[in-house]
Length: 476
Image 1 (spheres, helix red, strand yellow):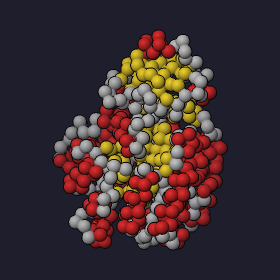
Image 2 (cartoon, helix red, strand yellow; image 1 turned 180 degrees about the horizontal axis):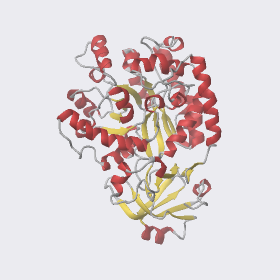
Image 3 (cartoon, helix red, strand yellow; image 1 turned 120 degrees about the vertical axis):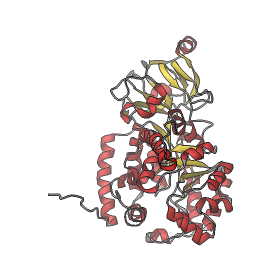
Image 4 (cartoon, rainbow, N blue to C red; image 1 turned 90 degrees about the vertical axis):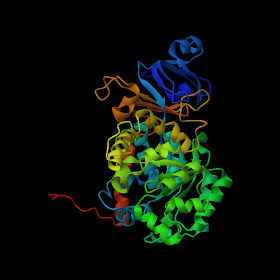
């Protein structure tokens, strides 16, 4: 990459041409240009095609012509389920069951966070996301959305932010348990008015529901109606564990679980992003499909605590399935590159578990790339502007250097992006027409300073929350 390629290149008056690259467009025709080019003006893509044509047509008017020397360009990756305010909690809840994870580790941690903590946590998480090629993420629901928004604006990323909302349930920290349904809705409306479409349109505010075990039907119905009124999305953890379905059948008197109940109260709609969605039956998959609900598949977190989600069945039913990392305490690695690799392998392995025979064709690499890009864009209701490299869409893109020991030889470019690519192969990232990482260097924040702040803030939160991490070995 040329060192002159900086953010100043892509202001209102400049045209930048990236050429001599493999351009994986992920457009409706699945076009891949072996020697392609992309033209960027301000924040948008104005041309995509063969390098020879693009150079002939645009080189005289371009302010910057950048030779990518055979590197690969893809749409920016979209992480559709991540808890940015949990980044400072990485490692505090490893190898414990979900209820212990929530009640004894995560809720005490989150309830002791300040807005500044959330800002630092989101900065730290954002750095890791950018290094793995993520340009846009859907916040799954956390504390202090204003702190998150400040970090997203500084990092230069795109995000759908949501507050962690609960109005009922056992084991909630005192301050959370005191919130009424009206308080929850009022808070989210205020956050929407403060931050929606801020940061040059890069930030959108969604409504959040933590999970059905911590939500009254009053909250569910009010969230459904307010989301429709505001024309925004709803992000909710759905059918995570078997106990959740038992809880719903006992308390809501339905014959299966969460999805069945959400269908009955008409919360299943095309603006719902259902995270995990592991414990669903065929009838519920059909309900999700008919309602055009989007599903975020988080392979690492699922394997750690939840189980095998029926992803192949969902995709076969026409459900839009995307990829998420979940939060640092339930995954530890915030790399969507890793999730792409895991998604394909786990779902191949699930075929043996379910059917007693292998099927290496399950979830092929081209499907996984769509899950990380255009399906992600559809899941966050932003596919009119992002998710593929097409004329008129925003210039959100990733540059991959395949000329390393991790990816060479490159017999099959597409499969190599899923099975061979590592985070280290991501060299540059652009969001909204501006480079936010270049030559593996984050441009808008000082990584070293963020790491230093994160170490101090995380230790203080754990101390305030009274969380004790047991020693696993004999420390001397």
